[in-house]
Amino acid sequence: MPRVIFAGSGQKGTVRIGSTVLDAALSLQAPMEHVCGGSASCTTCRFEVVSGPENLSPPARAELALDLGPGLRLGCQTRILGDVTIRIVKFPGKTVL
Ligand code: FES
Image 1 (tube, rainbow, N blue to C red):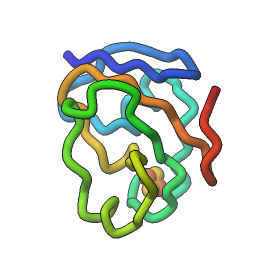
Image 2: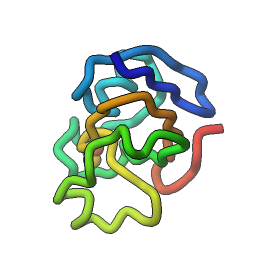
Image 3: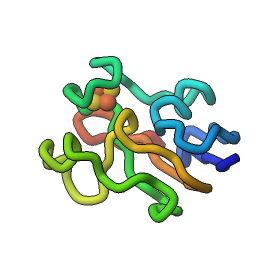
Image 4: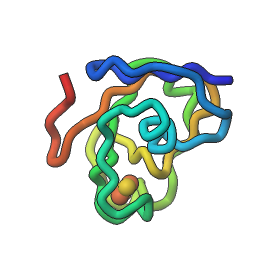
């Protein structure tokens, strides 16, 4: 099972392969917001990859259409395929320290 680390907030653990980053955050109690409930319309679940970008699913069509900014992804649209370290970015762009 992939190992996920939330840099800054410190939560870490393993998740099922194919889980979304948002699902991982919720199960590990990392402070990722999700105002729209995962429908790719609020962008409050945004994050940046610290390590292991090759272990995430490619950007979804919804992410590409939203123009999130350099290096930013949506937790509700990104699936975990292997070990990864991510940093939650608080809306409208503050990183969790
Ligand atoms: S939860 Fe709203 S865009 Fe991801």
